[in-house]
Image: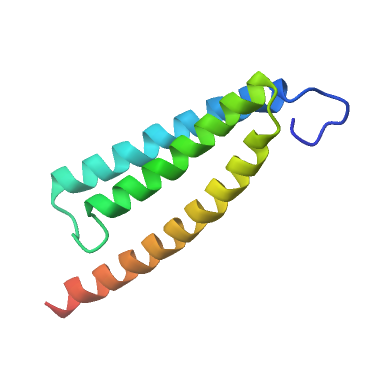
Length: 105
């Protein structure tokens, strides 16, 4: 919907709000399940959980700004997505390191 012309900011805001809220819940639930099951502790620490959660919540807040008609929501979303991308890439790297260390033991 974001690419459809001649629309107000509320429509993509509602769409992004729903999608990013679901993604936030999945992200937090994934960490909780991994911590409870005792999986590799390399990437499972509080700063990583807090950083990713902050990025997802910034995306939810940016969607709310869009719904309210503030263009600043686009800038907040762009920054949050870029930072979250770095978190996800580094998380994948930590997962690879964790698998390698588990095999070495």
